[in-house]
Image (cartoon, rainbow, N blue to C red; front, side, top):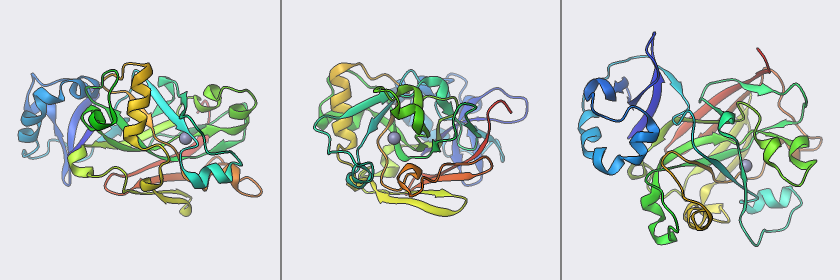
Amino acid sequence: MKLVTFSSGSHERRIGIMTDDGVIDIHKANPDAPLTMMALAGAWDQWRAEIERVARRQPDVRTAKLHAPVPRPGKVLAIGLNYADHIEESGMKMPEHQIWFCKMPTSVAGPSEDIQMPKVSTALDYEAELVVVIGKGGRHISKANAKDAIFGYCAGNDVTVRDWQFRTPQWMLGKSFDTHAPFGPWIVTPDEVGDPHALGIRAFVNGEKRQESNTKHLVFNVYDQIEHLSQAMTLEPGDIIFTGTPAGVGAAMKPPAWLKIGDFVRIEIDKIGSIDNMVAAEGK
Ligand code: ZN
Protein backbone atom coordinates (compact mmCIF):
# COMPACT_ATOMS: atom_id res chain seq x y z
CA MET A 1 0.00 0.00 0.00
CA LYS A 2 1.12 3.55 -0.74
CA LEU A 3 0.17 6.04 1.98
CA VAL A 4 0.23 9.77 1.29
CA THR A 5 -0.17 13.09 3.05
CA PHE A 6 -2.07 15.19 0.53
CA SER A 7 -4.17 18.27 -0.01
CA SER A 8 -6.59 19.25 -2.73
CA GLY A 9 -8.47 22.47 -3.31
CA SER A 10 -9.02 24.33 -0.06
CA HIS A 11 -8.83 21.21 2.13
CA GLU A 12 -6.20 21.01 4.80
CA ARG A 13 -3.61 18.27 4.64
CA ARG A 14 -5.06 14.80 5.08
CA ILE A 15 -3.80 11.27 4.85
CA GLY A 16 -4.79 8.93 2.07
CA ILE A 17 -4.06 5.88 -0.01
CA MET A 18 -2.52 6.40 -3.45
CA THR A 19 -4.01 4.27 -6.20
CA ASP A 20 -3.44 4.23 -9.97
CA ASP A 21 -6.54 6.43 -10.38
CA GLY A 22 -6.08 8.91 -7.54
CA VAL A 23 -6.14 9.24 -3.78
CA ILE A 24 -8.58 7.63 -1.36
CA ASP A 25 -9.27 10.04 1.51
CA ILE A 26 -8.92 7.93 4.66
CA HIS A 27 -10.82 10.38 6.85
CA LYS A 28 -13.71 10.53 4.41
CA ALA A 29 -13.89 6.74 4.37
CA ASN A 30 -13.73 6.49 8.15
CA PRO A 31 -14.01 9.66 10.26
CA ASP A 32 -12.67 7.76 13.30
CA ALA A 33 -9.37 6.95 11.58
CA PRO A 34 -6.16 8.74 12.66
CA LEU A 35 -5.83 12.21 11.11
CA THR A 36 -2.07 12.35 10.64
CA MET A 37 0.54 9.95 9.28
CA MET A 38 2.35 10.05 12.60
CA ALA A 39 -0.81 8.95 14.41
CA LEU A 40 -1.48 6.23 11.83
CA ALA A 41 2.12 4.97 12.11
CA GLY A 42 1.70 4.61 15.87
CA ALA A 43 -1.68 2.89 15.63
CA TRP A 44 -1.00 0.73 12.57
CA ASP A 45 -1.58 -2.58 14.37
CA GLN A 46 -5.13 -1.49 15.31
CA TRP A 47 -5.94 0.20 11.99
CA ARG A 48 -4.23 -1.92 9.37
CA ALA A 49 -7.21 -4.19 8.60
CA GLU A 50 -9.58 -1.21 8.32
CA ILE A 51 -7.18 0.75 6.09
CA GLU A 52 -6.84 -2.32 3.85
CA ARG A 53 -10.63 -2.39 3.58
CA VAL A 54 -10.69 1.35 2.78
CA ALA A 55 -8.06 0.75 0.08
CA ARG A 56 -10.66 -1.11 -2.01
CA ARG A 57 -12.82 2.04 -2.39
CA GLN A 58 -12.88 4.27 -5.44
CA PRO A 59 -10.51 7.23 -5.18
CA ASP A 60 -11.96 10.54 -3.94
CA VAL A 61 -9.39 12.86 -5.49
CA ARG A 62 -7.98 12.48 -9.01
CA THR A 63 -5.23 15.07 -8.72
CA ALA A 64 -3.85 15.82 -5.29
CA LYS A 65 -0.85 17.77 -4.12
CA LEU A 66 1.48 15.43 -2.26
CA HIS A 67 3.31 16.67 0.83
CA ALA A 68 6.14 15.02 2.75
CA PRO A 69 4.46 11.82 3.98
CA VAL A 70 5.33 12.81 7.57
CA PRO A 71 5.32 16.63 7.42
CA ARG A 72 6.97 17.26 10.79
CA PRO A 73 8.68 14.14 12.14
CA GLY A 74 9.89 14.07 15.73
CA LYS A 75 13.36 13.01 14.56
CA VAL A 76 15.15 12.93 11.24
CA LEU A 77 18.19 10.70 11.71
CA ALA A 78 20.78 10.03 9.04
CA ILE A 79 23.80 7.74 8.81
CA GLY A 80 27.05 8.82 7.16
CA LEU A 81 29.53 6.71 5.14
CA ASN A 82 27.33 3.67 4.68
CA TYR A 83 28.11 2.41 1.15
CA ALA A 84 31.66 1.13 0.46
CA ASP A 85 31.95 2.97 -2.88
CA HIS A 86 30.90 6.28 -1.30
CA ILE A 87 33.40 5.82 1.56
CA GLU A 88 36.11 5.33 -1.08
CA GLU A 89 35.14 8.40 -3.13
CA SER A 90 35.08 10.46 0.08
CA GLY A 91 38.63 9.36 0.90
CA MET A 92 37.45 8.03 4.27
CA LYS A 93 38.07 4.76 6.13
CA MET A 94 35.37 2.13 6.65
CA PRO A 95 33.80 3.24 9.95
CA GLU A 96 34.03 0.90 12.92
CA HIS A 97 30.92 2.41 14.47
CA GLN A 98 27.79 3.76 12.78
CA ILE A 99 28.16 7.51 12.22
CA TRP A 100 24.91 9.32 13.00
CA PHE A 101 23.84 12.91 12.58
CA CYS A 102 20.51 14.73 12.65
CA LYS A 103 18.69 16.70 10.07
CA MET A 104 16.35 19.09 11.83
CA PRO A 105 12.59 18.52 11.36
CA THR A 106 12.39 21.93 9.62
CA SER A 107 14.57 20.52 6.80
CA VAL A 108 11.72 18.27 5.66
CA ALA A 109 10.27 18.99 2.22
CA GLY A 110 7.70 17.35 -0.02
CA PRO A 111 8.37 15.09 -3.01
CA SER A 112 8.05 17.90 -5.56
CA GLU A 113 8.84 20.94 -3.42
CA ASP A 114 11.78 23.19 -4.36
CA ILE A 115 15.18 22.64 -2.76
CA GLN A 116 16.51 26.00 -1.60
CA MET A 117 19.88 27.21 -2.84
CA PRO A 118 21.28 28.77 0.36
CA LYS A 119 22.11 32.45 0.48
CA VAL A 120 25.37 31.57 2.26
CA SER A 121 26.83 28.81 0.06
CA THR A 122 26.98 27.41 -3.46
CA ALA A 123 28.34 23.97 -2.46
CA LEU A 124 24.91 22.34 -2.73
CA ASP A 125 24.90 18.55 -3.17
CA TYR A 126 22.47 15.64 -3.47
CA GLU A 127 22.50 12.20 -1.83
CA ALA A 128 20.06 9.51 -2.97
CA GLU A 129 18.87 7.49 0.02
CA LEU A 130 16.38 4.86 1.06
CA VAL A 131 14.29 6.37 3.86
CA VAL A 132 12.76 4.29 6.65
CA VAL A 133 9.67 5.51 8.49
CA ILE A 134 9.31 4.15 12.03
CA GLY A 135 5.98 2.63 13.03
CA LYS A 136 5.48 1.57 16.59
CA GLY A 137 9.19 1.99 17.33
CA GLY A 138 10.51 1.37 20.82
CA ARG A 139 13.77 1.04 22.76
CA HIS A 140 16.40 -1.70 22.58
CA ILE A 141 14.93 -3.22 19.44
CA SER A 142 16.97 -6.24 18.40
CA LYS A 143 18.01 -6.77 14.81
CA ALA A 144 15.64 -9.74 14.72
CA ASN A 145 12.71 -7.55 15.78
CA ALA A 146 13.65 -4.46 13.76
CA LYS A 147 11.25 -5.38 10.95
CA ASP A 148 8.30 -4.95 13.31
CA ALA A 149 9.38 -1.38 14.13
CA ILE A 150 9.16 -0.24 10.50
CA PHE A 151 6.03 1.43 9.12
CA GLY A 152 7.32 1.78 5.55
CA TYR A 153 9.83 3.12 3.06
CA CYS A 154 10.31 6.23 0.93
CA ALA A 155 12.84 7.72 -1.49
CA GLY A 156 14.81 10.60 0.01
CA ASN A 157 17.44 13.17 -0.83
CA ASP A 158 19.89 13.97 1.97
CA VAL A 159 20.64 17.39 0.49
CA THR A 160 23.90 18.72 1.87
CA VAL A 161 25.73 22.04 2.00
CA ARG A 162 29.25 20.60 1.77
CA ASP A 163 31.31 23.53 2.99
CA TRP A 164 29.06 23.94 6.02
CA GLN A 165 29.15 20.16 6.59
CA PHE A 166 32.93 19.88 6.78
CA ARG A 167 34.14 23.16 8.23
CA THR A 168 33.21 21.94 11.73
CA PRO A 169 33.48 18.43 13.26
CA GLN A 170 29.68 18.23 13.60
CA TRP A 171 27.84 17.81 10.30
CA MET A 172 24.45 18.87 11.61
CA LEU A 173 24.27 22.45 10.32
CA GLY A 174 25.39 21.56 6.80
CA LYS A 175 22.73 18.84 6.73
CA SER A 176 19.85 20.84 8.19
CA PHE A 177 19.11 23.77 5.88
CA ASP A 178 15.40 24.32 5.27
CA THR A 179 14.00 22.07 2.49
CA HIS A 180 17.11 19.87 2.50
CA ALA A 181 15.33 16.66 3.50
CA PRO A 182 12.80 16.04 0.73
CA PHE A 183 11.28 12.56 0.84
CA GLY A 184 8.32 10.61 -0.45
CA PRO A 185 6.44 10.56 -2.69
CA TRP A 186 4.52 8.16 -0.42
CA ILE A 187 5.21 5.60 2.27
CA VAL A 188 5.27 2.12 0.76
CA THR A 189 4.35 -0.52 3.33
CA PRO A 190 6.90 -3.31 3.95
CA ASP A 191 4.66 -6.05 2.48
CA GLU A 192 4.90 -4.29 -0.88
CA VAL A 193 8.66 -3.59 -0.68
CA GLY A 194 9.74 -7.07 0.42
CA ASP A 195 13.47 -7.20 1.15
CA PRO A 196 14.65 -3.59 1.73
CA HIS A 197 18.18 -4.73 0.95
CA ALA A 198 17.58 -5.56 -2.70
CA LEU A 199 16.45 -2.24 -4.17
CA GLY A 200 18.07 -0.36 -7.05
CA ILE A 201 18.69 3.28 -6.10
CA ARG A 202 19.52 6.12 -8.52
CA ALA A 203 19.99 9.90 -8.61
CA PHE A 204 19.58 12.03 -11.74
CA VAL A 205 20.44 15.69 -12.21
CA ASN A 206 18.65 17.20 -15.23
CA GLY A 207 18.16 13.65 -16.52
CA GLU A 208 21.84 12.70 -16.23
CA LYS A 209 22.42 9.64 -14.06
CA ARG A 210 24.82 10.51 -11.24
CA GLN A 211 24.29 7.72 -8.73
CA GLU A 212 23.34 4.10 -9.32
CA SER A 213 23.62 1.34 -6.75
CA ASN A 214 21.59 -1.16 -4.78
CA THR A 215 20.62 -1.21 -1.12
CA LYS A 216 22.31 -4.65 -0.88
CA HIS A 217 25.56 -2.65 -0.65
CA LEU A 218 24.63 -0.92 2.63
CA VAL A 219 27.49 -1.36 5.11
CA PHE A 220 25.15 -1.29 8.12
CA ASN A 221 21.77 -2.49 6.91
CA VAL A 222 18.39 -1.11 7.92
CA TYR A 223 17.97 -3.58 10.79
CA ASP A 224 21.51 -2.92 12.12
CA GLN A 225 20.65 0.77 12.11
CA ILE A 226 17.43 0.35 14.09
CA GLU A 227 19.12 -1.91 16.64
CA HIS A 228 21.97 0.55 17.12
CA LEU A 229 19.88 3.74 17.29
CA SER A 230 17.40 2.24 19.72
CA GLN A 231 20.19 1.32 22.12
CA ALA A 232 20.52 5.06 22.67
CA MET A 233 17.05 6.48 22.12
CA THR A 234 13.40 5.57 21.88
CA LEU A 235 12.32 5.45 18.26
CA GLU A 236 8.85 6.92 17.94
CA PRO A 237 6.05 6.69 15.36
CA GLY A 238 6.85 8.80 12.31
CA ASP A 239 10.57 9.15 13.02
CA ILE A 240 12.56 9.21 9.78
CA ILE A 241 15.85 7.46 9.04
CA PHE A 242 18.02 8.33 6.02
CA THR A 243 20.01 5.13 5.48
CA GLY A 244 23.08 6.37 3.58
CA THR A 245 24.09 7.24 0.03
CA PRO A 246 26.14 5.39 -2.61
CA ALA A 247 28.97 6.82 -4.76
CA GLY A 248 28.37 9.58 -7.28
CA VAL A 249 27.72 12.70 -5.19
CA GLY A 250 28.65 16.04 -6.74
CA ALA A 251 31.46 16.63 -4.23
CA ALA A 252 33.35 13.59 -5.54
CA MET A 253 33.37 14.75 -9.16
CA LYS A 254 36.42 16.54 -10.52
CA PRO A 255 35.82 19.42 -10.45
CA PRO A 256 32.92 19.18 -7.96
CA ALA A 257 29.54 19.41 -9.70
CA TRP A 258 27.41 21.44 -7.32
CA LEU A 259 23.70 21.85 -7.89
CA LYS A 260 22.64 25.12 -9.50
CA ILE A 261 19.43 27.11 -9.47
CA GLY A 262 17.06 25.59 -12.00
CA ASP A 263 18.48 22.05 -11.75
CA PHE A 264 16.05 19.14 -11.46
CA VAL A 265 17.06 16.37 -9.11
CA ARG A 266 15.33 12.99 -9.21
CA ILE A 267 15.86 10.27 -6.61
CA GLU A 268 14.45 6.94 -7.71
CA ILE A 269 14.21 3.64 -5.82
CA ASP A 270 12.85 0.33 -7.11
CA LYS A 271 9.39 -0.63 -5.80
CA ILE A 272 9.01 2.83 -4.21
CA GLY A 273 9.06 5.47 -6.95
CA SER A 274 10.73 8.82 -7.29
CA ILE A 275 10.87 12.32 -5.87
CA ASP A 276 11.56 15.26 -8.19
CA ASN A 277 12.77 18.53 -6.74
CA MET A 278 13.93 21.69 -8.46
CA VAL A 279 16.66 23.90 -7.02
CA ALA A 280 15.40 27.46 -6.44
CA ALA A 281 16.80 30.53 -4.77
CA GLU A 282 16.19 30.79 -1.04
CA GLY A 283 13.50 33.27 -0.12
CA LYS A 284 11.47 32.89 -3.32
ZN1 ZN B 1 23.45 11.04 3.53
